[in-house]
Image (cartoon, rainbow, N blue to C red; front, side, top):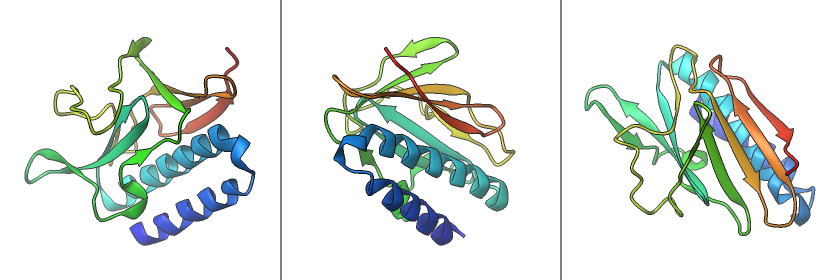
Amino acid sequence: VVTIIGLIAGAAVLSVGVLGGNQSTQSEALRLQAILKLLHEDALMQSRDYGIVFSSTGYQFYIYDHQLRSWLEAENETFLLKHELRPPLRISLVMDEQDLILAESISEKIPYLGEPHVLILSSGEMTPFKLGLSQLAGDHLLLTGKLDGTVDVFNDEP
């Protein structure tokens, strides 16, 4: 199932990639949206809990291990590996109407107290969030995640 999800996510990324280099904000937003939707479905079907930690320049996926009671990096799934954005793309994150201060890069220690920023639970629930993707002089897009697991992409003009 995870292999099928990887293939679908890869196809979505490749189909968006043909839009050209000036569409990098849109392609990154659609890539993340596709992965989150697929993880939501996989969480329901496989009874897994997923988590995502964000930095200003990328994100990392985790899978919850119920036996160890800890979040482990998703190392065996190619599309869940740490993802660094191409400069000058930047991420901003709002949760509970609060702007979060994100680490500059995913490799830095992230003070998330052992729990990722966004959870995708086997119950079908997802931590609500608003994620901004922007360039210094260019596109500004907003991804919104809702409790029911839906993820939408909007233009977010400054």
